Amino acid sequence: MGSSSLIGVVDILDKIDSVMYYPILIIVMTIAGLYFTVRTKGVQIRLFPESVRLLKEPPEDKKNVSSLQAMLVSTASRVGTGNIVGVSTAICLGGPGACFWMWLMCIVGASSAFIESTLAQVYKRKNEDGECYGGPAYYIEKALKAPFVAAVFCVFLIATYAVGFNLLCSYNLQSTFETYSFYDPDKTPIIVGLILAVLTGYCLLGGGKRIVKLTSIIVPVMGIAYVLISLIVIFRNIVHIPAMFKMIFEDAFDFKAIFGGMAGSCLIYGVKRGLYSNEAGVGSAPNASASAKVSHPAKQGLVQTLSVYIDTLLLCTATALMCLSSGVERSKAVSGAPYVQNAISTVFGKAGPTFITVAMVLFAFTTLLGNLYYVDNALIFLNKKRQPSKLFMQCFHIVCAIIVLIGAVIPMNAAWAAADITMGGMTLINLPVCMLLGDVAIKTLKDYEKQKKEGKKPVFKAKDIGLDDTELDFWK
Image (cartoon, rainbow, N blue to C red; front, top):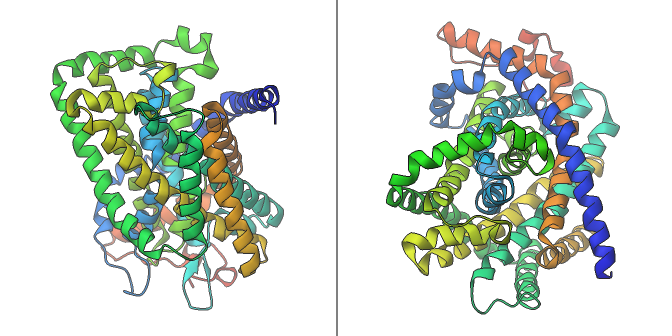
C-alpha cells in the first residue's frame, strides 16, 4: 500500500472515529450513565463501602472463582498501556481539561459497569464441569431473544480485542523507545514489533507458560510501583498542585474552545481515553464477571464498580497529575509515552524513562494475552457454543501475532482510530441492550438491599424478581 493510500485510509478512520464519538457515543454514554445513576439512586457512590466489604468475602466454594478473583481478571484487562499513553495523549492533544471529563465519565460510567456485570451474573451459563461463564452475548441471546444481535456483538468484540486494541497496544509499546538515542523510526518499530509478535505467538501457541505466570505476578507489583513513583513526582512538585488543578478546571469549562473544535476538544478526548482505559459499558468486563460464583448477582455488579475506579481514579489520575505537576512541555510532538517519560525524568533522571519502558513492556504483554481471553469466549459463542478446532485456533493465533507486528509500524492516529471505532461498536450495542434490560438489574439490586436491611445474607432467587427460573442455568 502506497503512502497516499495509507493517508487516505487513516483519514477515513479519523472521520468515522470523530462522528462515532461526537455526537453518537457521547450522547448514548451520557444518557445511559445518568439513567442508571438515577434509577439505582447512585449505587456506584451510595454503596461504595459495601463494594469494598464484598472484596473480603471468600468464594462460596474454594474451587470456584470469587468476586475478588473475577474483579482482578477484569481489572488486569483494563489496566494497561492506556493508563499511561492514553492519558498522556488526551492531555497533549485535547488539553488538561480532559482529566476532569475522564473523572466525570468514570463516576457516571461506573453505574453502567454495575448494570452490565449484574446482568452477566443473572444470565450466566453452566458448562459440563459446573463452572459458570457468560457475558453480553449470552444476556442478549437469552433475555432479548436476539441471537443475531448477540453474534454481531461477538464480531465487534473480536475486532476490538484481537485487532483494534492489539494494534494500539503494540504501537504504544514501540513508542516508548522514541526517547532513546538508538531509536531509528525506520527500523526500531519493526524490530520491536517482530520481537513482540514472536513472543506473543509463542505464548498463544502453547509455549511460554512460565513467562505468562511470571508477568501475572510482576504486573500488579509494577502497577503499585507506578503509582508510588507518580506520587513521588507529584509531591516533589507540590508547589505546582494548586495551579495545576486551576488549569484542569479552567480548560474543562472553556466551552468556547470546546465547541469551537469539538472533535479535538478536551471533552471528547477525556471521554474517548477514559472509555478506552476503564471500558465501563463496553461489554468486556461482564465476560469475566459471569465466571464468579456468588450468592447474589448484585455482589459482582458492586465489585465491578471498584475496578472502574481503580483504573481511572487511581492509575489514570496518577499519570495525569504526575505529568501536569512536572511542568514539562506538552504538545502533539510528545503525545504518548514521551510526555510521561519527560515528566518522570524531572525527578528520576535517566532511570525514569527506563522504568516507563519496562512498565509498558509488562503492561503491553499481559494486555495482549488478556485481550485474547475475551476473544476465545466470543469465538466459542459464534461456533455454536463449541470450542473451535485446534487448527483454526492455531491459524487465528498466528494472525493475531501478525496484527501485533503491524501495530508497531502503523501511524499513531490510525492505531487509536482503529481501537476507538471497534470499541465504540461494542459500546453502541451493549449500552442500549443494558437500558432495555435495566429493570432486571435494578430489581436485583433492590432485592439485595432488601435482604441486607432484614439482616439476612443475600441469596438470589430468580422468581423473587419475577424471572422464569426454568430459562436460567442458575438462581433456581
